[in-house]
Amino acid sequence: MTPGARRRSRKTGPDVDDAWLAGVAQDVSAAAGDVPVDLLGDFLPLLADAAVNGRRPRRSELEAVEALGRRAAELGVSAGSAVQLYLSASWRLWRELPVVVRSTDSEVVRAAAEAVMHVVADAVAILAEGYNSARRQMVRREETLRRELVDDLLRGDADVGGVVERAEPFGLDLARPHQVGLAAPRRRLPDVDAATSSLERIVLDRLGDRDVLVATKDGLVVVLAPGESEAPGRMDLGSLMRAELDRLPRGRPWQVAVGRAYPGSYGIARSYEEAREALAMASRLHLDTPVIRAEQLLVYRVLVRDQPAIVDLVNAVLGPLRTARGGAEPLLATLETYFATGDVATETARQLHLSVRAVTYRLGRIKTLTGYDPTDPGHRFTLHTSVLGARLLGWPGDGTTDGA
Image 1: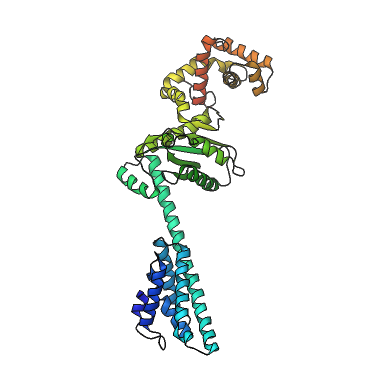
Image 2 (image 1 turned 180 degrees about the horizontal axis):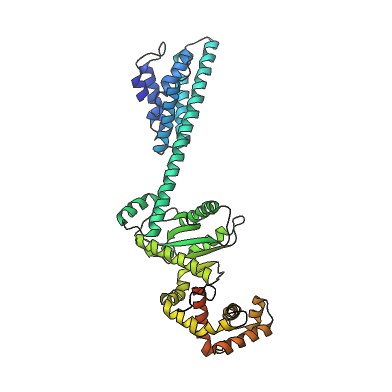
């Protein structure tokens, strides 16, 4: 017997009483499977009252059905199963309803059917409304919890036990190695959230729904995934992210950076910092590489670790270029492109939109001003290191090395 049937002591009409409704409820319960029959509440008495007396549900009664819809969502019952429970209950009650079974008056049956259908329509509509309202609240609550969890993981929250407990419902085993991938649009895009949704679908499909989180932070798309050693033979995270983002309308170009995999909650924060630093260095070095792995930029981290030394090197080697006509930047750009093309003057000229003669002239000026010959293998390392250091320091544009 449903709670609603137990609460009602009055008869709704001849032969329609609590005992009969309890029997119908038992039939519904047997057919409901895993769906709690208590979700019907007072629905069966409402149907019987409508069939016998033609009464429409009161507002308070419909509000009770709405609350049951919210309850169904909270219990994890699917919307289809909840609606099917109500339709099945309606069918079973109508099939056994005495006023219908025993009546020979078609007008009575028609009126009862019309009244019952009104109640079913009203109840199912308000049930679905309550269900959807609860689901929206649950989704918003889950999004908030996910966002807070991602922020704490990337920050390296000190409450490790709390983070581990909060990560479990999202399928994260923080004892396993994880890596973080960051995707940055090269220009402002209209909807980063759309990129996140699209990327989340493909990442979950390729990597599974455990140990994976996709979110946004500071205008970047963030993907937390198992370390590559956990899934040998799969497409690496950076290539997977780049391939999917490039499929988006107006999605190009993106640049993706991936940190190395580390175990534990602090390992996630470490991988995130590596990926973020890789993006920052790529920007300062004007790298257009679509996918950057943190280990590929370790040499640059070594350069910036001892900043006083690299400042001294840049000033000592490249400082004289400031005296050149037009300043140091054109000569610095020539050196940068020359080294990037493997010391090929013709390719350097093509990329800089200069003649080969102009490139050769600039290389000669650099030798005269600095005393280092870019075409001499013995001088190349010193010049190349100085150029990299200059780009990392923003030299000569912002004067960070002046007076160092």
